[in-house]
Length: 496
Image (cartoon, rainbow, N blue to C red; front, side, top):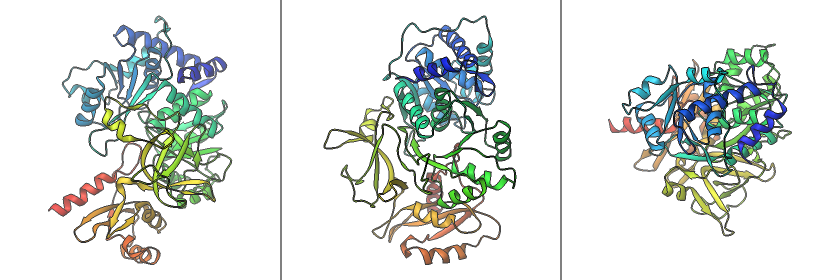
């Protein structure tokens, strides 16, 4: 099955129902077909790349759906990217056309490469122009055809383009739709960027495939989101942990909206935050696990139990196990190892990068191909849940002992006055590495008191050598803390 078949099924049942804000399914898909006609006139054809370099807006959605109809390849591009990252993506993908906005057009122009750009406002005008004949494809895309190339964050060198097929997108929509009991009567509110798989594939894709309604904000603002949840009669909200922290800060007694489902992902949700949110909102956040390369293969169960600090178990059609980081053999129950993923939502590989693709997979003794997630995890057999404890490359080895940053972070997050934290390794000539903590904290926060508590609760080699109090931790567009930048800061200080 392809994602277009899911979209068409929902359209057949819900033509006049609202799909995107107040825009109906019929108007959304008809508008997209008009845009597809204009894109074909501009020379875009099956297999060409269309880059979307725009903030959240309906023009982005029309262009995305139009590209799928044409059979071209969508390249969602982070609106925070500038010359280096933007140039790499457009050049590497060989983008035929670039959809921009008034906020982003100048950055493409400054590259000086002569890319053909289309303003998102023009896309929106085309979608509403009844004189444009809606495009009808004279062929059918196949499940294995590439639908989108989503570039990874590039924490280890240049970002790589993960190729997701029409079948992958269909499976991702099915994963979230089935696991979270998505109904056509649901209204989802999000402020996630549509250039990311969380917003594009889980949020937009899931909603359009399940026949629900989605309300998309350009950016996250806690007060506006709380109002939107009430005014739009929302039933679902998808966010990242930072968003939930802000919702707790701004939600006044008596103004807490009652939703059936809050979903968190893209970064670890602390058990403490999970408990605080349940107490205030009366609903347990459902934490899931996903990545650009494989969608959302793990999720806490909708009907429970939702175990704080865990990412649940496998979603429909997916398999997972924990392997020895140096091979593919399973570790013993309760031991830490690398999380391995297999199933129909796993991507096809990295765009024109066979070496990276080969390194990303391992084959077990039964011939099953597994994606090496790079995430360190444990499996709790009693609760039947997986827990992410860190990244393989973030593992700190100090004096021969393995230290998992997440373990320290969970202790720090429980300390009064801590808003957010991150633990990274700092090079040390004697012990190899030492754990160092960066903390966002409120006034009156005491590093001495925090360290005293950590010495009581953690082994001595796990206690951070230093605690740096910062005004704001570096984050990406999703609000995920960028640890490589923190390690760079430590290296720069050491070099002075």
